[in-house]
Length: 243
Image 1 (cartoon, rainbow, N blue to C red):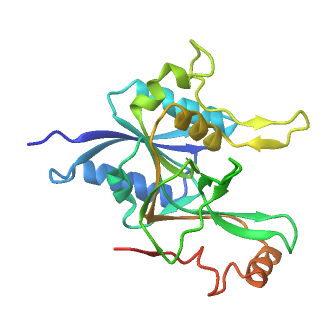
Image 2 (cartoon, one colour):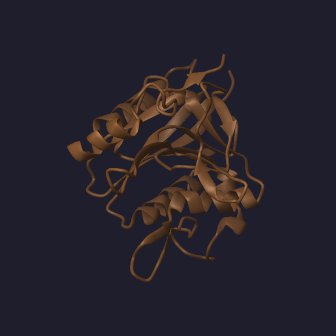
């Protein structure tokens, strides 16, 4: 019988509680581990109490490196996996993520939904991908969001990915911010940019969607509706994958 690949599934949470989606994923992972026909076995862990978020990411990296797991699957506690969530593990690439969205609400006129996967434009700036109506499910990108992300062990072990030597947990993830506290680059984007510069393969699988539980005021809902992000002429929230 072929040996199962060992996946380390980590759910970061500030207060030690986990959402229904995270609970479902962990229970399903433990159940599938016992299924001889399923190709993966899982170690599941709730990373709790560490702040800020990138410190929890580093704690998750340390946890997997203390096992023989080949990949880290980190899913944020507010994410809600769909039934095919485990298909994400079949996605080729060193860093892979599923389909999920973020919304930006600055003013009523500047409110939008965008996919948490990014490619560089002609000026070298990262822009959210906006697939055409018939988009391939798996796409090479320059960065992905960290809401549900799978990272090969080799990336975390690479000394060139370490921001400082000999720290526990290892210094791998960081975010950038200005002296006034404004965040200029998130930890997931920073991580992907550094990994991409080293030649690691980053992909998004648009066929594996995740929802996200977030508080959204009615002004945001109205702005999204008025701005076209929920209208038929805007294809971004409604992606039709090519077979």
